Length: 484
Image (tube, rainbow, N blue to C red; front, side, top):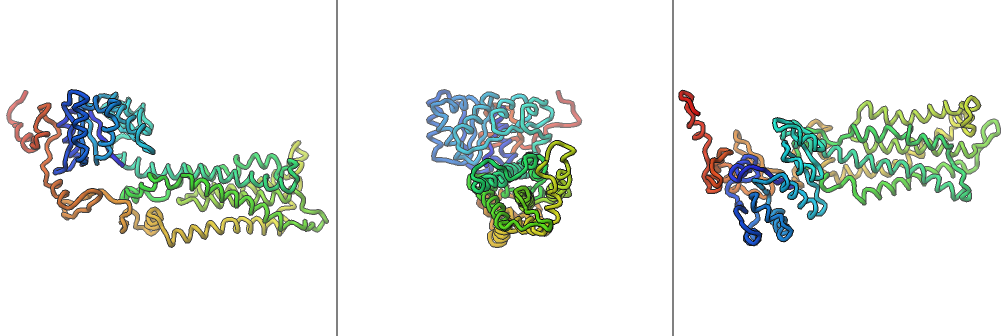
């Protein structure tokens, strides 16, 4: 994840902002592209910096040449090689052009732009995701954004917590929607081989229509709204968990075909298990045989139970609404059978369903099948999940276990497989090193004298290595005297 600063402030202020936000670290090599009069000068400067990769700052006049089609690729390659990029004295149009440059030329990139003023609107609209900060600068940025926050510090929670949660929720809802529909409607395909492709349905027409409206409606809703894998405190304490979202591990081609194959397997297993167990059509005590609608309703019951159990296996965060949605959907099917079986002749429909409640609920075969068939279908995946989380747990799995055990945000990943940023405690004097940081570099960063974030000169003290000290600025003012 790379952070670029696009600001309208002058160079000295931008540099000080970079140090204050730790985008720039004292002692690091800063490459500055400023006061370049022509495209040739910019090209020469870019070639000079190609062998030096650290941090870069670009000024507005030079940026206008850097964004020219002749040199924009060189500028982009150099900027992507830097750990951070700061563009100062940038116009609103140039902000949008920089975002479009990255969005167009960097494959599989997802850009996020955040701003608080009207001059950030074009940049926010050019990015994949726009975040507006509502404050003293007005509401223009907020109105043009996808998400609005009140303070910049809330971006961490928006990205690391809600961003990761919503990614997983959307992935599960999309995959689950494909799964549950394939699981039911492929059964009609398997049945077609037995009825000679005559078009005879296995399920009653209103039962088919209510599948997505009633019996499997609530499970994807609670998955998409309430589900969360790791608590907010743990995600904020371990930002490297966001890496799984960046790697697109929950929604990719492999995961899609995994769910499709699982749906095909479940549909075939549920249909043929019921079909072969009812092969001899054992009659009831009154001499009646099962019939096609009995077989269809038994298979339908197994499907409703299986797909809702699948939702339960995917769910990581259980609430009373989650229990109601999943188990209530199964109960709704049984209630539907009781009521719908008595519609005819009061209502001119459901002739095929007459007496089905008596046939189903008085048959021990039905009870055995609606429990056994879903159990057999779900058992292989359940065993796979158990072995995977026990023998090869991911960082997310370990974080979930830490939440359950009450350790939550206190847990520190020993392997640090994703890497952590630098943290320093003034009281204890201890430091943790992340990517690209060595102890000597960190020491220079901690002892470097950072100045006040304002300069009185266009090319003043910040670029020369001296800064206006805050203590000198404060002592300049005498409260006993008046100043104009």
